[in-house]
Length: 180
Image (tube, rainbow, N blue to C red):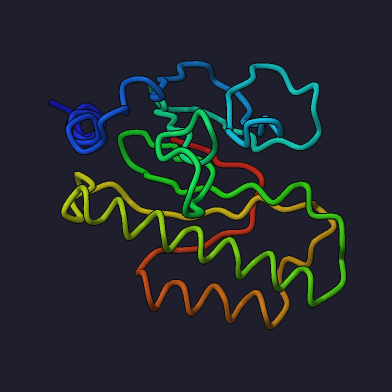
């Protein structure tokens, strides 16, 4: 059995409503948007919206788990990241911050720090539920922000380094993931 299938089985055992929210995507390109009314991420196949996370799928399949919001795996309550994507090689925690409209340094820093808190909550919960066994997949975290956000300033780099040191996971500020 492949890593993808093993992890899907383990997730199904660990989370009661996993099978209700989990989707497998086979398309080569697809997008993730957030439904504002229910605060839940969902897949779209054409990008008619500009506030999306783009997925380029060069693998066989990608698993999609909406996490937060009314229709997510964890529902409402404690704040978690928006969704998870995974394939045979990578397991990605993703937080959408595309509605951020202030470019003021303090607001940008606050959004980054809130996203890190949401990642920490999600990673801790999944680590506990899966006994930190992700079937040898590479863990990654993505903050999806407006293109106008700074991408390489000192504050962002410090956040990346602290996250890597505390979680052992690379943190990216990108609006796209390429699965190979």
